[in-house]
Image (cartoon, rainbow, N blue to C red; front, side, top):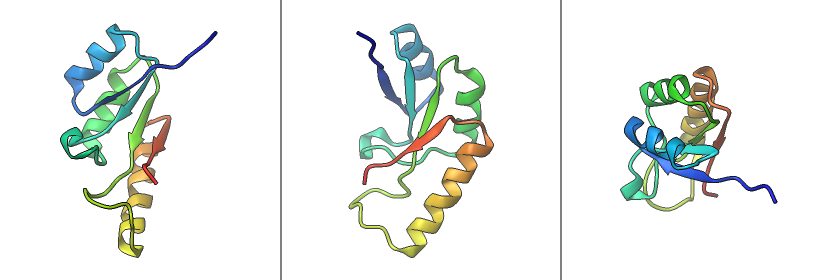
Length: 95
């Protein structure tokens, strides 16, 4: 039976540990203590360049509820474009 082990990380040091521990996919976030927010472009770029496994970027522009207004959605769309620009294999969100 095949399975995937996705690990949520919010820094580059954790990327190496996750891969060494058998992760097959990374969910890249910032602020895990807040439930995971969208990471900055620099972290996305560095993680993609450093990783031997797929990187999926969390798209969540702010802490709190998951009721997004038009401004939030515009930010989220730009964050998805940024993740793609830097080579992330995909994005994820908590809807």
